[in-house]
Each structure stands twice: as C-alpha cells, then as structure tokens.
Image 1 (cartoon, rainbow, N blue to C red):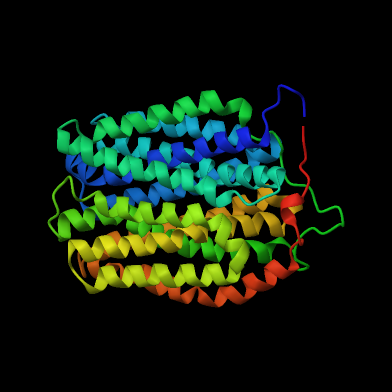
Image 2: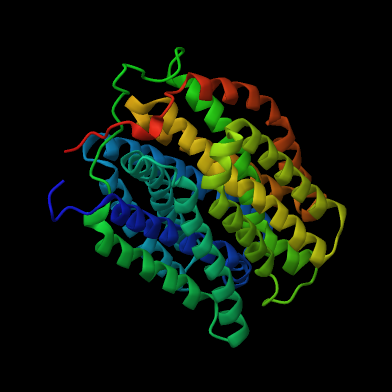
Length: 400
C-alpha cells in the first residue's frame, strides 16, 4: 500500500457512506409513496404494477453490476449506480405525466439494483482486507440513513415543505457521495481463493447461491412488505395522520439499526445458523402481530419486531455467500442479490394486489408464511458454514 492509498478503515467509512446514500434514497421514496399516489392520481393496483417494473429494472441493474465488476471492478458499478439513483430521485420531485414518472422510477430501479449488488461486493472485499466482521455495521449505515429519511419526511410534511424536499435531498446526497467517495472505494475485483486451495463448497457455487438466496428472498419479502406498505397501511387503513404514517417505517428501521449495531458481535458467537433461526422467527412474529391487532400501536410494534430480524438476516446471508465462494465472490453476490427482487415482488406487489379483496392487514400474513417456510434452510446453512474456510476474513485480495 502506498502512502497516498486510503487505509482499510477509510475505505470502510466511504463504503458505509454508500450504504447511507442508498438507505436515504430508498426510504425517501417509500415514505413518499402516499404523496406520490395522490399527486399522480394512482390507485393501489397501478402502484403494484409500477413496483413490479421497478423490481424488474433493479434485477437488471444487479446483473449489470456483475458485468461491470468483472470487467472494471465493483467501484465502477457502485459509482455509476449511485449517480443514476441521485439523478432519478431528483426527477421524481417534479409532477410529470404517468409514463414519464414510471420511466424515472425504472431508471431509479436500475441504479438501485446496481448499487445493491456492488455495495455487498465492496463490503465483502473491505471485510477481507480488515480481517474482521464489519458487514453488519456497513448495513447499519443504510439503516441509520433510512431512519433519518423517515423522520425528515415526517418533519417536512408536517411543516408544509412537502415530500419532494426530502426526496430531492436524498438525491443530492447520493451524487455527493458518488463524487467524493470514488477514490476510497475498494479497487479489487474479487476475493482470491484461500491459499490452501479451498474455493467453496464441494458441490460448487450453485448451492451457495440457493442457500444464501433463500435467506435474502425471505428477508426482502418482509422488508419490502414493511417498507412499501407500512406508511400506506397506517395512513389508509388505520387513519393515521400524514405526519404519523411514516413512523411505522421509522420504528422498523430503528429495530433494524439496533440489531445491526450488535450483529458483528453476536453472530460470530452464536453462529450463523442460530442467528438466522432467531431472525426468521422474530420477523414472522412481527408480521403476525400486525395482522392480528388492527391498531396503530400494535402495527408499529409489529413493524419493529420484523425489523429486528431483518437487520441480522441480510448481512448474514451476504457474508456467508462471499466467504463460502471466495474465488468468485463478486459473481456469487450478484446472483444472490437477484433473490432480493423476488422477495420484493411478493412483498410489495402481492400485498398491493391483496389490499382490495382482503385488506392490507390480512395481507401481512403473506410474509409471515414465507418466513416460516424458510426455516428448513437452516440445516444447509450450518453445513455451508462447516464447509467454508475456517478463517475467511483473512482471504487475500486481488489488487489491480
């Protein structure tokens, strides 16, 4: 390392800033959803269709990140994705025809998917460089920023400034992080195989992708259900005021943040299998509480309990994927990240479609069932951990 090269700690801080930009932007969009619906004259079914298109665009962005990382390195994918996110967020602040509004959101989806995958690639790389677990803290930056965005949205709406100010602020922050953080992002393209020759489980990377992908799928099933519909549920179904509706999402993000702040200490001690089991059960219990009791207090508590589980589950799955296939970490992480959008489709789109025939309260049983059905993956996850290198965080990096 030259004297001018950023240290591992500096790189981790800027990668954390990237997570913060992603979280600020995403939370601004989902908490502005009721206002977007009103401004654009959209109903729940059309919102569901738009979310489907955004998820498809994000999946394409994840594949784009894989190609860009393989050719130039994941920092190119990250900065390009952040720039697209920032510009698209700025454009959503203007009232436009529905077709143009959908096009802007699809551009945002491509950027979001690129950032999703490349941030996890960067996180695994810097974790290997530092030789210790930091993924939970990196994801905590995302969560802290999302919580701030929810509070800003509540404050701006209550103060009369409008949702556009919060969304525009998030877009500007993403652009600033893109420019200022470029040099500090990890230049490595992938994590090299272990010096002993270990390259992952004996049956290849497909098994890694399926096991870790199942956890990501179910985590984002719960996450997108809460992120997309918590504000709408509180506002439309429980008659919460405009300034109160974002607080369900804020409670969710507080619980996610707390679990991630302790995750780097707890997960290595309990093991991934135990931590994943507890996370799945916590998420399922939270969704069940929302469906069982139709009150603002119970809904906020249920969203918080769901967040406590999701907070640990997502970084756990990405870390397991990167460590189990160290020679192909970027490729495997990009593929695992695709499961994100399958969960998002069910969590966001299906709940919207069910909102008319059964109501959003009952629709929250969908993520609960999905979470419980994922419990059988814990056994293969435990075997995957046993097959991985004993100290994956010491895997060397491929430098340019």
